[in-house]
Structure formats: structure tokens, C-alpha cells
Length: 189
Ligand code: ITT
Image 1 (cartoon, rainbow, N blue to C red):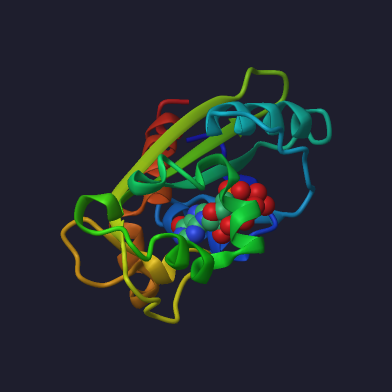
Image 2 (cartoon, helix red, strand yellow; image 1 turned 45 degrees about the horizontal axis):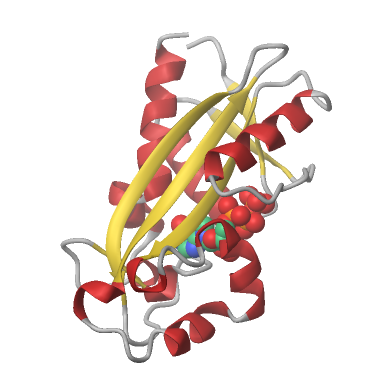
């Protein structure tokens, strides 16, 4: 792997901590850069990540990654999806639970999706997608993590992401799965 240090362009400390832990295991140094980029209104996370990466490429020649993530809830027809950040900052986990008060069983199923874009010099950015299926809890549980972690229970578990340490969340999270693909890509560079 030629790339030894990369920027992670994000304002989200929680994401950075998870990615840093994961990528340090393969000898990659990750530096958080809160450069900011336009998050376009699109129906796919991929389009948001790609647009952001093309913007950042004009600002730095250093290799970087950025990520767009979202929580897609079955019983809400995929909401909040690409609007996850806005919804989190407005109604938050409590608002989502309220919207879902009457939803039971498989209506509470959900998927977290993560799309990383890797950019370097003039190359077209590459995208890496990861998913984690699960369900939305009835109440908030746990103190770890960030964002929707207190209400998301990954498949096969009874605890929310917020009840897990970073290392455990990294065993099956959407972010970790996308980063696994990024690591394979780096190894082949
Ligand atoms: P950036 O600066 O990287 O864009 P952000 O917090 O705006 O940070 P996103 O748009 O990718 O990130 O995330 C959409 C929302 O989903 C946001 O509110 C996050 O807190 C939440 N989210 C993303 N990944 C999550 C995870 O692993 N656990 C819980 N919530 C998550």
C-alpha cells in the first residue's frame, strides 16, 4: 500500500473515531479535516459522496476519504434516508421513535448505509458501499457512539449500537463494511 496517510473530510467526530480505529489496524494514518463541502440534495448517497469528493479534490492534492451515510427505515418507506443528517438535527432519535409509535414487527426493520468516496490528485473518485441491516428499538438505549446509535439494533443482536464499544460496532457496522472494501482497494494500489 503506497498511501500511508489520508485525510478523512468530516465534521463528525464519531465517524472519525470509528474509521481511525479500523484503518490504523492496517497501518494507515487517518487525519480528520473539517473542510466542509456542499451536500447536494440527491436521492442516492452515492451522488452526494461523489459530488463532495469532486469538490474536495479541487482543494487538496492529499489523498482523502469522505462519507455519506443514512438510515433507511422500512415502515417509513426509507425515511430518513438521504435526509438523515437534517432529521437527526431537527427531530432526533426521539422524533423518529415518536413517528414509529404504531409500527411493529418487520415495519421496524431498517438498514444503515455508508458510502465512502476516496479521492487523490486528478483521478476520478472511487466509491465503496457498506450496509448493516437491523431494526429500530422501542426506546433509546446506550451511551456510546453517536447519531442514531441509541435506536439501532443490528441484525442478530439484542443491544443497540450505542450499547457497544467502537471495536464491537466495527465488527458489523455499515461504515466498517465499506472500509473493508476500501482497504482491499488500497492493498491493490
Ligand atoms: P459529515 O461531516 O461526515 O457529513 P454528518 O454527521 O453530516 O457528517 P452524514 O450526513 O453521513 O454525516 O450522516 C447522516 C446522519 O446519520 C447523521 O446525523 C449521522 O449522525 C447519522 N449517522 C451516520 N452514521 C451513523 C452511525 O454509524 N451511527 C449512528 N448514526 C449515524
